[in-house]
Length: 611
Image 1 (cartoon, helix red, strand yellow):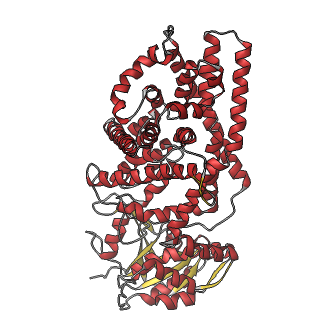
Image 2 (image 1 turned 90 degrees about the horizontal axis):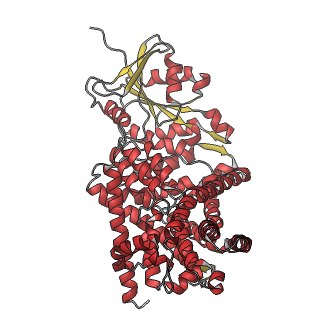
């Protein structure tokens, strides 16, 4: 009976150059099929050793560890442990590591070593590591791991003969399985550092910074400080440019008022277009400052590290670390955030991420937050360099994040019950972002915001102006109460009055379903229509609100907008991504219920405290 050729499994992290090395070793002697019982592709090939003996190589799907997070990784685990029916266990392992990302890839190698199989390490892409200023000592790495290590450049067939010889020497060896270290990642970093002969200053600085920025205690504190600074800057840096825009809008309104006779056209342009849209455009500086920080964090390489820090917290809420990027995108807008969930393999993880994405404080909420904070929160310092207004803004963003984590935990225990997936990420080196890229990113964000102001916000504001202008109020009547919009608002007010909302808010809620910013333009339009004297004309919208709403009502309004799903685009993209109306309607229902309860609790607590 002929003995089968020894089976060598080629294994490693994704993007380590594993398939290129497999192709270099086997050439045209390959066949492709599927593993028994699954749709995962099986790619195998023959290789001849130096003594002429054939061996079979199987290219296993890329994996980050032996705890699978996808069908591909499950196949890799089952083949390596001998669990897959119809597939024999390998006689030896060829483990492919990316030389330029050694500490991350060594984590999996340490797990594989514990399987007790003969093993050879292919230290691949050493040319790329050298280009980045990193020189490794394969002998030192071999001594640390207790297995042969061969430098390779698979795409150039460099090191292939040495690799064959190393495999030949390992076949048939008896290997003891070492115990796993208490911390795989810490041990991987130690071994990687021991193998370094020299590295460029940028790599040394990357490791030094990561010792602090990824520290389990210092790291989250630094992240919180960065976020806090960002929200302080939104107010502190925007004051002057906001004043310029307010002055320009006021001058434009005065010009139109002086140029046209009193009547419907003047009211439409001044109260509807200029007053409504201008009330939103004035917040452009705050939005650009917010995105300046986001672009800087992305460009320097810190944003991926923030994802790493948040992974532990998110996993406790039942979310995969893969959910971080979609949720982070939702800080700009929930629509691309929800679309980005397509990268999440686990169906329950993806559904949960979609359902909580609207809780991330998108840029559309910023005009609402800024308006209410400016109207009701004093502009005073509460500590060295700490403004009360920025502190409140930080609190609102934090409330959205905590709300999302709490909702995710509840959803994963109920409607989205299931196992969470495993998450690994590769950390880029730190770098200075290009000024051109930052400027382009800010320009694109400004164009998007202004197009939105000139599109959906303009149309909604003009429609609201028409509903709020007719029929005309008689002597002693208030236009916002007798108009069509006023009658609709009176019906909504019955529902929202228990949580402290007044007629103004009731009127703003319905049109702001189109876009959250419309709440600002809606209030501005109605106040412009109701204004009765020159003193009111000269008041800013924030000043008018401060004199019209009690503080508990304003705080309840903020709490409502932390949670309410007021965005038709978000609802539409959720329907598309979930292939039906079931989950969008569920999302709208639970978020409105959450917003109502949060606003009510805020209002009732503020009243009880005598605010």
